[in-house]
Length: 141
Image 1 (cartoon, helix red, strand yellow):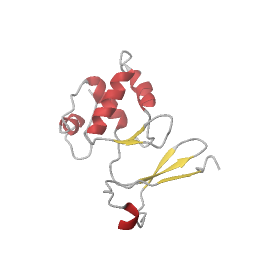
Image 2: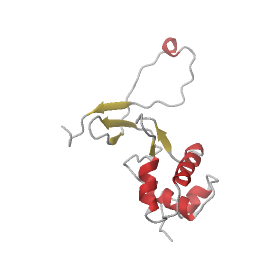
Image 3: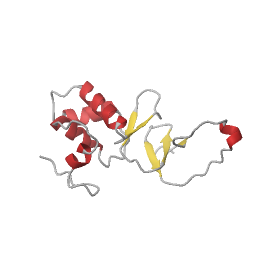
Image 4: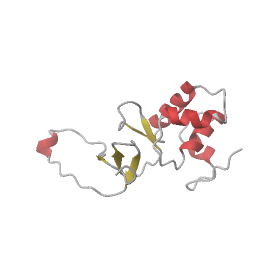
């Protein structure tokens, strides 16, 4: 069994049991891969990594697990990549910088103020604000 001691929970199963998600060995492997992952992986990347441990796992299992985790508030789905969804396990408020060459995504932990007047939003109720900054990372410059 994995060592799942994280974030003040006795173990990873406690963390996800609280979200009322059915826990299987395959799902726990997906959760372990995502925990603390800063690469903002796609479902395909997660599938590729976890399939090494569970060769009979289907892509549908990965996709359905990510969808369940997203719906329960355990991860954030990023719509940064127009080709495929990316996932972020860090739920703290932050923004993203995306390299236009290598497509790597970097977390930006900064309080960026955007002034939006009531006149501009016209009664729209804001749930979240995410800023995406595109450019060239250090390696691609």
